[in-house]
Length: 154
Length: 159
Image 1: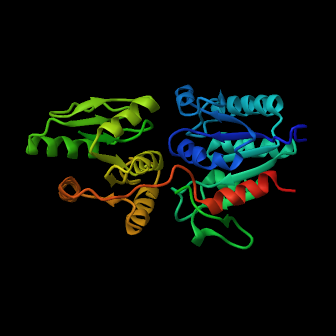
Image 2: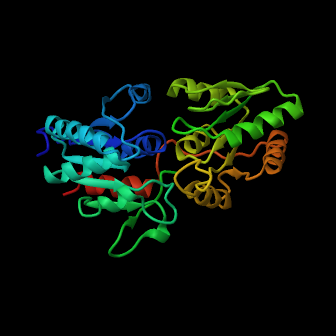
Image 3: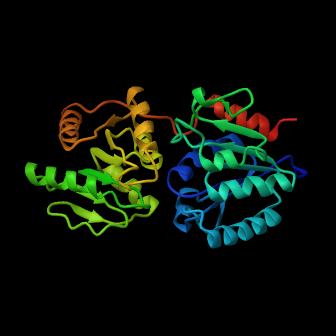
């Protein structure tokens, strides 16, 4: 489903703070493609002035109402952007984007936050079946049947 | 100027209190703290609850030293500038964050020599004094490691 010019439509999704900072450090992998960011804070536009940025509800506590609103917003985003690739570093918004992206045929990449040294994050474990590329940033957490390790954001 | 930051999600008054006491004892007037959703009333510090990303980066650029909680956003933003960084991890059992992930990640990164870590007010004072007299040269690239970018690129746009 890539565009005729060979450019992929990439959805780069994260919540705020460290997830957002880590996401921006891997987006150079998509240089030359059409990246749309999805995050939770409109002030982050200043970080990516040359990209489209869509804002969705935050759900840091995994509150039921927040998750429903966020799920509907993300469904709308996925239908509107029709991404070829969905990339996320966490947490709840990325988790939903990976699941929905997969259901609509996108290639999906989960990079678990570098903050998770001892176990994968809860959202990281949740997306296991939906992430085509499932990555940890700690080599000791990589397993043959589990997440892969290919390096870190720094 | 010393810049202190605890992120936007939760207060971290234990750290802000340590720094305020230290600034009082040292009679320092050059400490600015971003304290998050907190009611902390400082004696000596200039406090700001939140900052936009450009304001945040301007404060880091203006600082000669940064003291931060062990949130990865704060750590990475500071390391990108090459400014000396002291990290104090939040504890899960004190309700400062959900669990002890900040302690574990801060320890790993300090073992690798990327950051300096303090877990008591005395340690904090000692590390700050050390770094102010002899700033280290730690500085990270502007993007992720090449191997990680390659793996993501190959999967995303490969055949």
